[in-house]
Image (cartoon, rainbow, N blue to C red; front, side):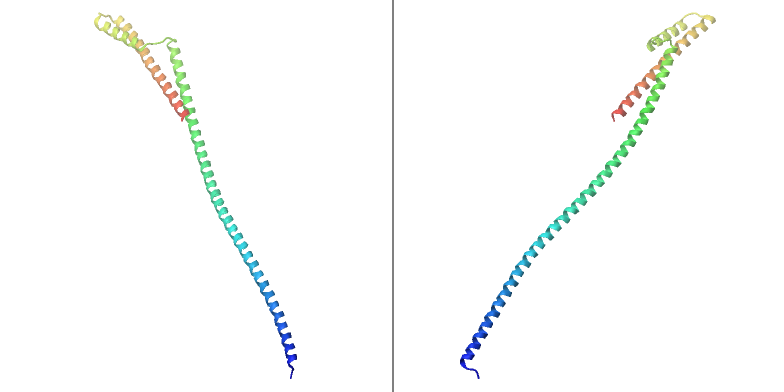
Length: 187
């Protein structure tokens, strides 16, 4: 058997080994705790990165939605421009028709003015002359030659009266066409 001293020595050796093992356990525990702390820090950073990525995804989604709405708005504007172009073409066609009608009416008015020799015919004056002549015809004695001349003269005055009516209608048409042309230009 072993002596007491040997046992004490062995005991000291075992205690020393236990202390060494305890130190090793403590060192490993400290290293495990340090790694856990590092792992926790990495997890925090990873959570921040994930949160940042999610924020960027949401921002990207909003940007995509904005782009989609802008593309839709662009499409609407292009369609509106096309519609307005077509409307402008129709307005220009209508204006050209009014211009052509104005030219025709002006030419007709010019022709009528040439026919009457450039003199201004007064409608009311012509009507009074016809009324006076008709009254004179009804109240005066007549002969066939004088009647024929009289009727020819009244017929000529009626033609001039009809010309005045035609010229007034043409002037009215010209004024109406100018008014329509102006309203189309302003629209």
